[in-house]
Length: 355
Ligand SMILES: NC(=O)c1ccc[n+]([C@@H]2O[C@H](COP(=O)([O-])OP(=O)(O)OC[C@H]3O[C@@H](n4cnc5c(N)ncnc54)[C@H](O)[C@@H]3O)[C@@H](O)[C@H]2O)c1
Image 1 (tube, protein in one colour):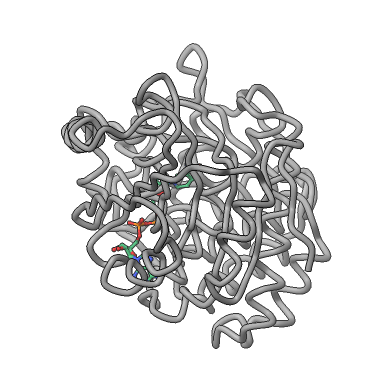
Image 2: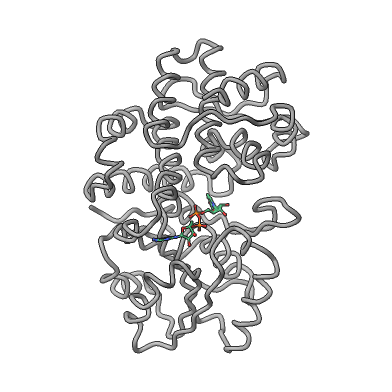
């Protein structure tokens, strides 16, 4: 399997272990002798030693966060800046983000701002990070209860995926990441969707070859989109399929609903509107429900529809308080619209929450 290039700027490598990391750093002309590994305490317990062992002849510094979304704060960023300055980390150093989307977003933000920008690479260890958050250069932290509201676009110099790391990932986190994989298929590639449906058992059982295939395919889709539209001014918006509903649902549940589950409910809501507008068939909608149910990322939820709608109005991707929603014109073809009225949006939320 070839590496995937993103916009002629950086490469994504998909491997079964960490053995080729140094080789790929050399190949991509990344030559720092000081390395700062930013990771969380969970991931550190599994993989930090493996990475450290690769860098025996380097100056290695480690910053270990507490796992979880709470670490995505400006306080943590402050502490990391202090750590970097205290250890004389300069622009020639390299930051390694070793972990899931939380670590990647924090390490990316620090890299984009420390000394006006130093190089970083992503070593994503959750499925969500491997197929989504490590690619495309979005970095950031949460602020005043708003997710990812402070941040930047700043590309990594390389993404190194070791799919074996998924073997230690809790099942619920693995399933969470599958929502993004399925999303990629719905928005851009009907054949990919058929592949996922036909191989759903192998995916659930984490068959290595099947996993490698879906990670490769999803990385390719994300890489293509962000190459065309790096700063989300156009087509990149379709990656938000299910997300405007999803974020509003996550918020209303006080984040007891995981991102992947929120996105799945959101995808069903968006597809309901497409169905009501005669763009897709009822069978498509029912198939999506059963696929999400098969992967345990979709079921009935009792949440307040009015509050979810209000949350949607404040989504940071809206313009002039008009809710932007990504819909399907057909399976494998998505578009973004601001033209939907309140009634249909609320009916879609109601339908999707019924499970
Ligand atoms: N930058 C982007 O484009 C982008 C896109 C999507 C999501 N995000 C962000 O990503 C974050 C969510 O990322 P996530 O779902 O990866 O969550 P996460 O980083 O919190 O990881 C989930 C949990 O899995 C643990 N973990 C990670 N890898 C492991 C492994 N291999 N084995 C065992 N445990 C492991 C972590 O310690 C954590 O407890 C959110 O903050 C979201 O805003 C960013």
